[in-house]
Amino acid sequence: MYYIKKLLKMLFSIYLIGTISFLLLELIPGDPALAILGVESSAEDVAILRESLGLNKSFIERYFIWGKGVLLGDFGNSFKYGEPVSKLILDRLPLTIEIAILTILIVLLVSIPLSFAIHKIKKASIKRVLDFIIGLFISIPSFWLGIISMFLFSVILRWFSVGYNNSISSLILPCIVIAIPNIGVFTSYIKSNLDIEMKEEYIKYLYVNGVKRFWLNLYILKNSIIPVIPLVGIMLIDLITGVVIIEQIFSIPGIGRLMITAVINRDLPLIQGLIFYTSVVLVIINFGIDIVYSIVDPRIRSERE
Image 1: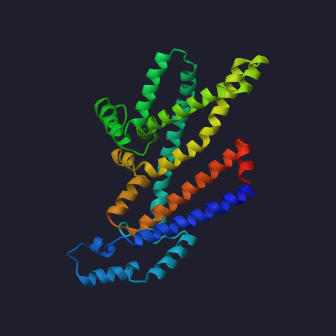
Image 2: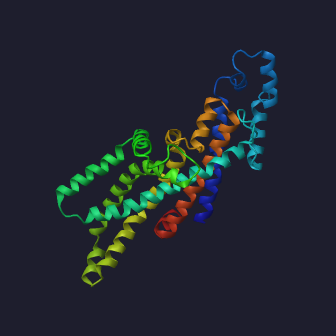
Image 3: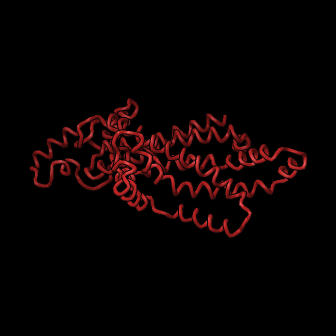
């Protein structure tokens, strides 16, 4: 029953997000046809373009046409590119998802051992210095770090390519740039969980009963990471929706750059399609994280049923 409820909520969320995005875009002042042709175009040319784009239809007609297209996976053609919106998005979405997955791998591979290593340090002064560095990681703006990293590692040292060149190696630097603030967040969160777990009574019980330190540390680490699972979902959502600036800096043809182009050109079908596709991906990710979390920690499922 728990999973059925989550599935129904997911479907309703997708419908609601799609409808709200359609309504908000329709309320934006200005004429897309005029934006495409320019202010010097004649009224006759604007009227012809409006008719060809379906902008002369009523709001209700456009909404039902849009809803039917959503069910069929057809969002119409882009005003700017003249290509199907679905094709434009599906061509770029995998690259953005690839960036998100690589970034998460970097974050987890660094933050988990780092948090455990910091937790094991006994000297308070060293811990304070490391906590300061972690706080610095969290506070560094990604756009500033991206510009500095590109100039240093791509232009001066030439360790990486300047911009994206259709290879996975050209994504390493952008992913590291995105990962650094998240490494700070995850390390701080896991370290706090480790401190809490170490004070639990079951740890003392296992230690007294002769459980080997390796297995004890592994058990503590497992219980400290479980609460981080929702944080992984939040980070993945943030990465898919928030890599716009990084994609611009590193010339990565992902969803972020496509959205900027669509907004600048008032490309309504493309904007609506981007919002809908992104929303679907995010809702599915959220649904998947909830399922995984409920499996790993069955108490969550029992509390919500």
